[in-house]
Amino acid sequence: MTTMLGPGSGRARPERVARPGPHPIGSPARGHREQRRRPGPVVPVMFDGNRPAWLVLGYQELHHVLNNPEIFTSDPRHRSRQVSVSPDWAPLPGVGRRQSLLRTDGDEHQRRYQAIDDVLGEVDVFLLRARAETVTDSVIDKFAGLGAADLIGAFAHQVPALVLASLCGPDDDPEVDQIADDLVDLVDLVEPGADAADGHHGLVEQLRVLLDDRLDEPGDDIISHLVEHPAEITDDEIVEDLAVVLGFGMRTVAGWIGNSLRLLLTDGSFALELSGGRRSVMQAITRVLWEDTPMQVVAGRWATRDVQLGGQRIRAGDMVALGVAAANSDPRVGAGRSPGPAGSCPAAAAAGGANTHTAAGAAATGSGGSTAAAAGANSAHLSFGHGTHRCPFPAQEIAEVITRTAVEVLLDRLPNVQLAVPADALVWRRTAWNRALTALPVRFSPV
Image (cartoon, rainbow, N blue to C red; front, side, top):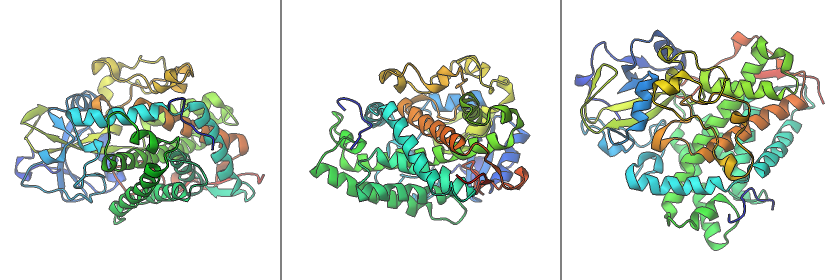
């Protein structure tokens, strides 16, 4: 096969919630309205109707939370004993008996995080881009002759699932094909009442099957490389950590592709450069990370001790949720969300220097820098997190390569694509956690 790996290769205590009372967040529409009202940088909320938490809306406050894991830990064992959070709660994948690297801190987290970072850093971005182009073409071929399609279900979900699954092994491996199906199922399981825990469980079980295969016959893929990593990651850790990486990657990239296409098809400022416009695509996907990020709210952190944050008194054991979308649009740090010179965002300076490097892995592979850096894009947003739990730089680059390639190839293949419904008729998924459309119907000249 053609490999893409290079050589060597919670809940807060109700009686302690400060006034005003918690804001219920039961749908994205309500959740977004609450964030737009800006009652303060940290507010008490109720997630899914019965889970109290503190929602961090301010950029500086969120930066502080992300940068201080010793105060705001990702380990749910620190949550208040008076309040339980079930391991099958959709926003907290991997909080079962075997915790993923997402739910560890300190040396344990660093050991597992470094292994993921190293293995993803070995992915050859040039081969990845070629793979993404091939996959995108094959997906478009399925509806190109119809003159109409839903670019969410038929495109934005299919492309990242197939590309991400290919990192786990060759195309002719039926287990790898099943990983792609599991990823599509997982990203579809975000509506109220959907059993996201079952979706996560299915992905975990399929990764376990693939791991057993790689133990018997290693290959040139990310599972085999994790098995061989000097950190001696256990089998359970490999499965749990990859499920988180692939699951979050799938939801992020699928939403990123869909939201970028919506922007390009509805914003008149992109009209002149839309047809095959490379620069326009880079501007659009960067703008989406600032203004329409797929991961709107992330759960969760737990306070390890009593602390003041954003004018609120947070008690030890209280749950803290990360309002990424609100922080990116925090008016206190200026309008730094438009593409501009890297590192020029006042938000970065206000927070003491946020992450301004979108894809460090590009340098390691000799690509001369990330596409975001090449385009002069401002990447001080917090859409990929910050601190010890930030999305690994190679993973950010993989996400960017898949997103940009998918959008560019689609516009090249279907240059006259346009919305088939009015823009205000588009419907967002009913969840406060993610920002993604239920459908994006378009029409175009059959090819």
